[in-house]
Length: 414
Image 1 (cartoon, one colour):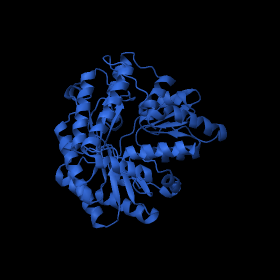
Image 2 (tube, helix red, strand yellow):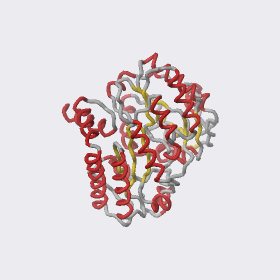
Image 3 (cartoon, rainbow, N blue to C red):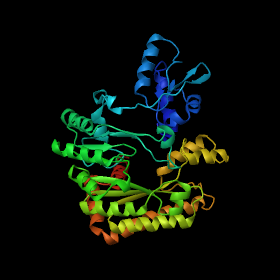
Image 4 (tube, rainbow, N blue to C red):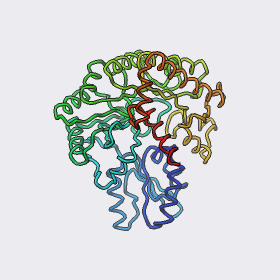
């Protein structure tokens, strides 16, 4: 569970408990890990797993069978009458190769295929998600990953990753994989090994790192190997075109030239590309945002296919969240979580910068998106025509196309 979904989860739990009052509900994920006491006090959930949950869930089931309090389960919070108890923390799994692959036969997989609303864009109708690694070693101040994963990055054996893909291809006729790793390409040699192994097995699979990759590692050799093993789309995350914001506000040690080079090379190879930006950060100025807009326009001219200017949201567990909370600027109430839920709505913008008003931020965001698409249309008109053609056929090659297709489908159904 992510923080933006908290109010939805609250409602879902109420519905479940109303129909099945004896069902035990376990919550996990980033939000629950950061604030277990708040979650248990404000929902009817029975347990909260802190961090990874594979071992915890087995021990919870064993405890429920024995009908005893789970006081000895590490990395667990639970409610005992009206009191919330948070147990001692549990260490992260050292070797994630020891974790079995998910039992997807227990899920209604056909429903996911039919819904076809992935994190990225699904070219194929039979697609699914996977992870090849866990964690992230970076310490961006707007992200709660450092709190959750303690700065650790652990990867699976590339051959085991391809084994899982092969199982999915044979068992479910999967044609496309979306990797949800927070930082997939952290070890260039392992990624190259994965690409070689996938290509060698001739599985007729396409794939994409939906959460993005670190541009500094994406040299031409790696991007070429990714392309020839079936990679169709890559997301990069410059976050800002302002060096001041990168260095002084979000603590992202990033060379923007690496992003520029990676976008150029990926585009020349025929890989679709996207760039994420965050605006409305504490301390950010209109000048900083305009630098981001200029940089996004530069990438558009180089062949970047799509971009997203997200409005900053203080995620619980992030450094900026703790700073804003300490300053008394955050109050954990329904309004706060509704604002998190609305973060993807282009008609809504809440600025956390003392230099930018909400209305000004909304206008800057709209300006950023319009300028990007204008540059794309001017320098790469065939890409715009192809996107319009894809949308008319219900085809998804870009996240933008998926979003518009979903919007039109829902609108037509109404």
